[in-house]
Image (cartoon, rainbow, N blue to C red; front, side, top):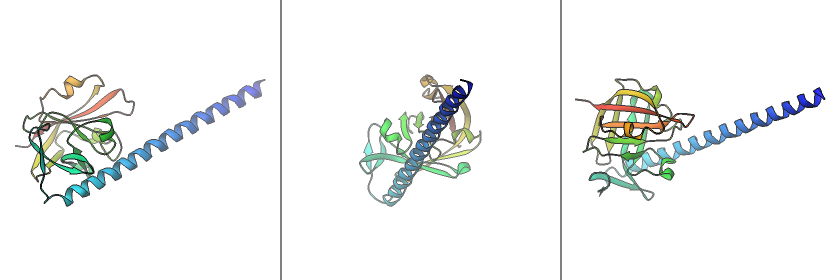
Length: 191
């Protein structure tokens, strides 16, 4: 009887280990594909740099460039992380699979909020940023907006008001690995 119980526990443990391994592999595959999609969008945006851009009223009259049927407002880069990502002009769950998105606010309004998945090749390393680190936002018309990190905090998933309060000209957020909290980076404009 003891031997059968031990074997059953071992089988259950092995099944749980394999399930965790499959989940890890799936998440890594999603991260890899998201990174490839972001790289392709960045390349397409660079190729369109001299092309005419449209203007979107939803983004506060900010210019956008169309790539594969999606409107991009530009790119965001984090020199300390050696990371540059395209930024979609509008947020939705499907768009987040490709690149970070404008969640709310505008550049002109001084309340821009960007959301991204916590994929390693997207916003998964935001928690490595520290106050004083540089963040650069480049719009599709080539204007570069320089910021420094002012505050990195972890907020509850329901703290939407704190993320979109407009106290900072640029805020970025992603889920933590539990999915129950948001890693949020608030940035101030470089004078």
